[in-house]
Length: 389
Ligand SMILES: Cc1cc2nc3c(=O)[nH]c(=O)nc-3n(C[C@H](O)[C@H](O)[C@H](O)COP(=O)(O)OP(=O)(O)OC[C@H]3O[C@@H](n4cnc5c(N)ncnc54)[C@H](O)[C@@H]3O)c2cc1C
Ligand code: FES
Image: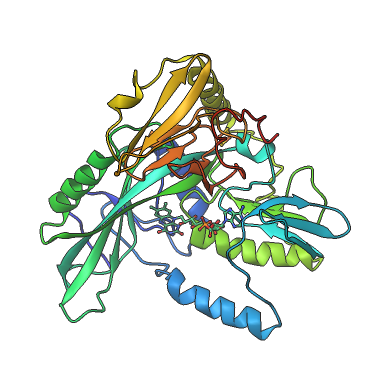
C-alpha cells in the first residue's frame, strides 16, 4: 500500500509524537527492530504494521484482568510507594494498599525523585483533526523526516456524514519553553492543507506530553535503587503502543521470575554511552532552567496586567509567585516553585496550566497536580515548603 503525499517524505511509524531529527532518527532505528521487511524509502508509506486503537484494546484488557480475579480501582492519586518484601502504596487520601509487587506506569514515575529524570525530558506535542471525504486518503501511519517533524494518521469516520478524520501532529517543543502554543495549531493546519488539499474543517485540536529518553528506548524494569518488586515503565518517546506492549511482556516475565532477552535493553538503570552528548545537554538545560527560574525577573510587573483566564509568574522580594486570574476575576496566588526539585513553573496559555520545564510536572491554575513527577500541589503563598526530595 503506497500513498504519495505531495512533497512530504514519509515513513511508516509505530509511534506518534516525536521531536528533533537526531533523536527521531534514533527512534526510527529502534522501531525498525520490531518491523519485518526492508526499510521503507522516503516518499512511500508501507504498512508492515497496522494501527492499534487503544479504546478497543483497553476494554479487552480490562475484561481479561477481571476474568483472572483482578480489580480495577480508579480515582486515587498515589503519592508514595515503598519497596520491601511487600510493596506499600500510599494514596493522597491516606489509604494504604499492600501488594507483592507494584508497577508504576504513570507516564513519568513519581516515586523516583532524580535518577530517571536525568535520563528523559518532557516535550509537548500538538495535534489537529480535519474532516476529509470518506476514503479520499488511504489509511497509513506516517511521519516525515524533516526537522519540523509531522506525523499523520487517518481515523475512519463512524458517523453518517461521509467523513473521515485526518489527524496531523507535530510542532513539538520542550515543556514550558513555548509562548506561541496557539499558533502551533495554525501552523499544523496550514501544513495539513498544503499536503492534503481535500482537508475540510478542523474538528479536533489537542496537545499532550511525551517523555523523550536519551537513547529513544523506554525505561522498563526495576526502579533504580529500589527493591526488585518495584517496577516502572516510562520514556515512551511517542511510542506508547509499542513500549506499552513490550512492558506488558517484559514486566510479566520479571514478576514471574522468567528470563527475558530484552531486560538489559530496556533496563531503567542503563547508563548513556553513545548518547552522552544528548544526556549532558538535557541536564545542562535543567540546570539552566533552575538558575533562570530563580534569577530571572518577573514575567509581568503587576497582577493587574494579567488578563482574565491567564496566569503569570510575578516576583515578590525573593519569592516567585504563580498568579492566575480566573474569567470571573478571582485571583489565585501560589508558589511558582515546583515541589519536585525546585524549578520555576511557567504558564501554559493554551492548556491553562502551570508547566515545569525541568521534568514535566503540570499543575492546574490553582496549583493542583495534573501530572508528575511532583506529587504535591504548588504551595499556597506564605506556606514555603521544601522540595519533595
Ligand atoms: C500528541 C501525542 C500523539 C501520540 N501519538 C502516539 C501514537 O500514534 N502511537 C503511540 O504509540 N503513541 C503515541 N503517543 C504516545 C502515547 O500517548 C504515550 O506514550 C502513552 O499514552 C503513555 O502511556 P502511559 O500509560 O505510560 O501514560 P499515560 O497515558 O499518561 O497514563 C498515565 C496514567 O497514570 C495516571 N497517573 C499519573 N500519576 C498518577 C498518580 N500519582 N497516581 C495515580 N495515577 C496517576 C494518569 O492519570 C494517567 O491515567 C502520542 C502522545 C502524544 C502526546
Ligand atoms: S518537575 Fe522536577 S523540578 Fe519540576
